Image (cartoon, rainbow, N blue to C red):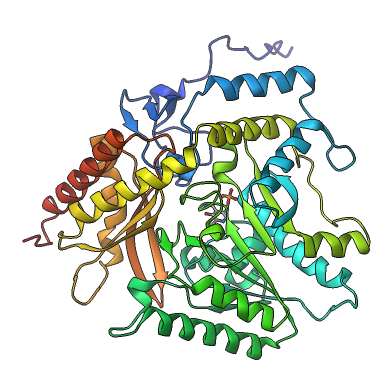
Length: 474
Ligand code: PMP
């Protein structure tokens, strides 16, 4: 007789506590070889980890937590919204909190933009921007269905989904997927004074060179086949906080106008106050047709991003099909809108963008003072509270470090040990891979904190290179 099989035992013990087993992770992290430190709490500008360490978050995560963590006012706004309704199918219905947020956003563009479309991530916003540009030319009278191309820049980052990655000039992130990316995207040089300008060249000459290059690209692709030129006003993650030289965006806007194409500005990282005005284009003599925003929009309290369109685009759609042929289940999420509306209210009422300008000047001046003399610091650049430091093996020739040296990452690791976060990256410009770190402190930073951050960055950079045996720092 067969023995009765015992029912499987159900364990009542909880699964392993991931806080105690950092090498074991069920989460698919960026690397599968080890698990990163676990964040247990974050308050104000500080983040605490499971190993007991705590850092001053000098990058706001990925340039996101602009008003700091655990703000009770934002929490209350989100809870109030949950108490009313926690979700709404925004493809069919509107809601007051979405209206209020869109009104706030449009108001912040001095009337340049007409409508706001709310989504969950920067990549989604860039996908929407591409489709909106295409739809505009299908709806405009007479339609221009031949416009299917885009022109983007080298050393750019516009997102990780296939459309937005296709526009990105981020070599490392594209490499595995090159053969399946969109083929309708032409590429021109980034505007990067440090790597792009030749000796003796004036800013005006450099701008003209880049405008001529864009003009040639339009001609090469077919002048009336291009929907839009796409650019980050300050290049974020790929090159490490590289602002354009004065006059660049005005010149690029003129080339777009010459060919009847749109200008799409990706302000996902650089916008919403980060660079000292609500939008970076407000410091340039240019206005975008379509703009994307994300990180500082919700300050990290919810996953939220937006696309703003100007009157030209909105009017064309209104006079055409009357609908944007797009849609996400979570678009216009009411809790995310409530969070972003409160974050934006705080930024506005506490004059935080003015504070970004003031403390940004201080941060820039201190970083130049402390780091320009270092033999391995090639370039310190930035705008507002968005600064990058590029490292070189040879200051005179601007030769980058070999990839194997992993410099940016070593500096990031040293920063974590010394209590600050530094966002590492390796940008590609004309085939040159340059290590950089990026700083993006909270908009609420005080002069005292900016001094502390600058001194800490100096300490991290000097100590990292002192400990590298193969580099002479004398
Ligand atoms: N555009 C820019 C300029 C970005 O910096 C990023 C993200 N770093 C994106 C788009 C993509 O945003 P997300 O990661 O939210 O999809």
